[in-house]
Image 1 (tube, helix red, strand yellow):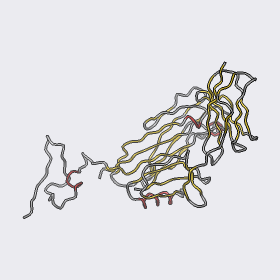
Image 2: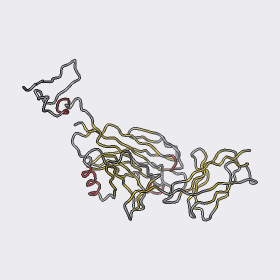
Image 3: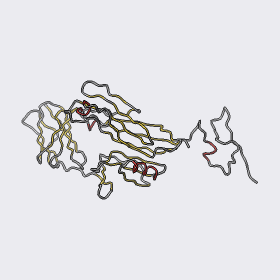
Image 4: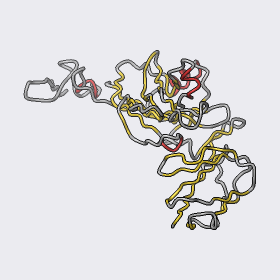
Length: 156
Length: 145
């Protein structure tokens, strides 16, 4: 004898199903509980990337952004970038700042340094972004290094 | 689960990813962009480029060597009569001196086997040596009145 149970959602229950009437004995677990409103969120991956700052000479010459590819293959349908953080590393710069931010920060320019750090996603690629520059240390000294970290979740 | 390390032509690591999805797709994505990388399967966590680097000839990830620096003293009297001598750093190391993360002596290249430091103002200063592929060396010198 085959036991058949139909799971369905109600206003009082957080349970969701994506296909009503699915046989619980043969269905995939995710098939029973997943729908677009309540994704199970499995981790696709996480990582970090270091992006150099811009020298004052380059900044005055018109360069205002540095980017570095830190992850790719990021075309999985239903992927949900849930957590992105970025931080500046004080040890690699004349300007010492080490903090954790989401997902874009801009320094309060004071004449000695300016810019910001963050990330961008395009064409299945995660780019770390750094617009930091500094006047300290001479025209060839780059702005603060940006360390961009991320975590991406799949909703299937 | 796979770990993917991205590195520059000198072997320095600038990104590291831990992927729980299609490893081949991730590798192909980097290869299509012409980005060199190394993949390790079934290794948890992410590594830090401050301590590791890639031997580009063998494509192996190895720990950056540590500098064998000695310091004669970490506490000195202010002024010109006392000093700390640092030895053992690679020749041509870059040197920086910080006070509370502010660079107080501009970066210079040390063209000698030892560095003698005297400090006029009492405070704790951080001396830093950098020479690729060694790990960065730091030590604090405290100048007292």
